[in-house]
Length: 67
Image (cartoon, rainbow, N blue to C red; front, side):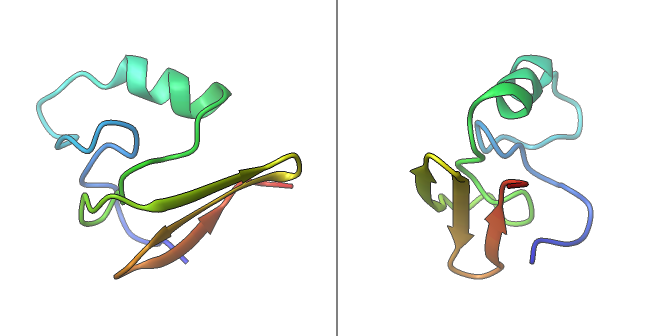
């Protein structure tokens, strides 16, 4: 459900503009699910299963891995 441009880093929750998040992007691209909402920087509820993961923001809904 997450749409729109990312304003915050999904891994550390910091603002994307003006910061280097290459290490965060590498972690998100390989193994880790996002821990923070990219739209509002709220901490998300994350559930990891053998089939993938889901991350839910209380304001913006659920994001899931490609299964």
